[in-house]
Length: 207
Image (cartoon, rainbow, N blue to C red; front, side, top):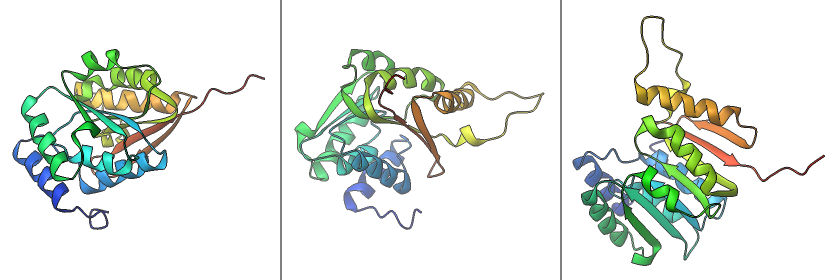
């Protein structure tokens, strides 16, 4: 899969900057999946929690429609400066990206209900269940929520003498919540570190 998903110079530069800054940039295959998902729903408004150094944002923007806007949130100002430069090198106008400095769970409650086509979360895993609740509030019917680093959701449960760390436990919990919610259509993609995606279905007619 990594051989099939080809980066250009802009993406390679952003990913390598992310690696130097230890921001854990998304893999080429993971980025290609994000672009595909954004394109599949004609995304115009996307929220990203975890700007990193811009590689995931470039993938998302390339899948979004022209004149669309990516809102990207991160707690590290230096990451966002690197991301801003990466978007510029990739040819995106400054108005295509809204960078917000802050913790995702402090920023998302200030965003408009039902106004977004897609929410991508690549932040502290221990907060994933809380991010799911916020994402479902933000998404329009037919919108998609995606969590990165989700392969832990597919692992076997721990033995009687061990317990998962809080991040692993939260990833498993959010996978369970997504799977059990009848209003969501879930899919766990074994790409990169794993992407857990779910479509928020439109309300069903009564009867």
